[in-house]
Amino acid sequence: MMHDIEKAIKGLEQFKSDYKPFCGNRADWERVDNALAVLKEQKAIKPNEWIKCSDEMPEEHETIFAKFKGSDDVRVVVMFEDGTRRVHHSYTFDGKWECEKSPLKRTVTHWMPNPELPDE
Image 1 (cartoon, rainbow, N blue to C red):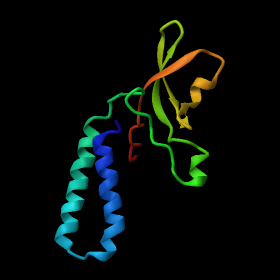
Image 2: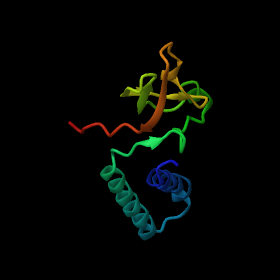
Image 3: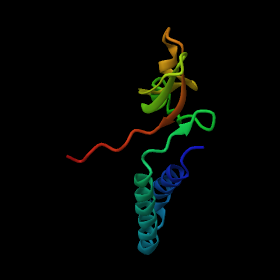
């Protein structure tokens, strides 16, 4: 499952962009902005949650141009044939992990979004 917090953030941001031009009640938009701030704080508290690939895969871009890239680059846990596990970066394209295409036999077991970059 995609992080519920991320879904809520995306939904509220989409709601704002779709309906703000048509509705001018400032108090309502302040509540939406406050809810977004709380959700973003909650998201920042849990930066180390790995997502099982069997539960959910990263969302791939929907536009025709972005679709050629697949999903955003994310952190992945790669397990090799001998059971060794390592953290790498990869992305999906048509639901398949790019890093699994190498001749080395490896499987992506978990993934997580990359953390936010530092401000400085």
